[in-house]
Image (cartoon, rainbow, N blue to C red):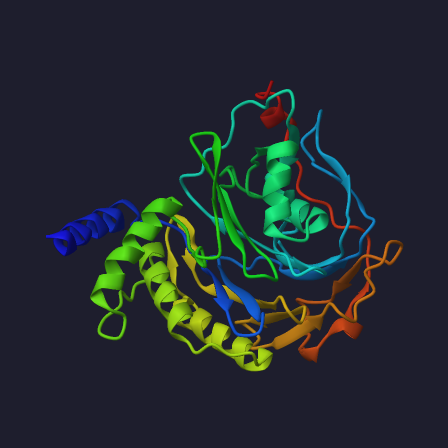
Length: 355
């Protein structure tokens, strides 16, 4: 009877998320402290993706007008930006990784409390990469120094950005941050290794629980929908062998990401993120290597943060991309100095609604 109940629950969740968007994140726990986080990025159109190196000591602003958060970065990081507007993914020099994924049902606060500093959603991931070494530190700060997250339209559209955020650190600790009915909900612990998109995280876990009873060696759901990708990623990230070999571990995580990627040319009208997988990243948080794989160019390269100059006063640097460049191996020497990256701010008409 219990199995039958899980079946009907799973069917119901699949029905209510038929229009969910894509992207998948996994955390691998290997041997001898080897922890690796990987994710896919799926989107209908090219995203003008760029890789940046941000040094410590950068002055940053929350981009949300009056009472915005202000900070000076404690840690340097390597990040991926999208649409010239936001940091979508990255790892700092302490091995903290932040990944932003789509969540249709996100509902952010409609007002900010007096003790909350405002933060535009395009800077959400970078805020954590700049300021914290571990998941525990990040969550403790949210209690002592809360921030008020404010969304903004996707550049070139009138559709508001709706995201949730995952954090993981070099110890393998993990956290999922979602805004539900205007309130921040946090799921924290090493067990939260997988994240996709809709529905909200507790319901994703319920779907995964159902598929655990089926047994992944016999059958796994195969569509591009978020619950199906969650079930596959959850099974495979636990099924692949544990290793202390960082190169093998990275290869294993990429193999899981390949299994949940969306083939090129696939798209769903009206839902830009159930679309082609544009890129994949894998972060080796023990050895501080950040691997990037472009699906359109077949490039696979990495950045070794242990060798990067990320001290205060070092320049902001960008990796030239988008003009036929082809990279392989460690590309640290290929980065060139650049003007600072600017997060897409909250439009004045949106800020006017806050009080």
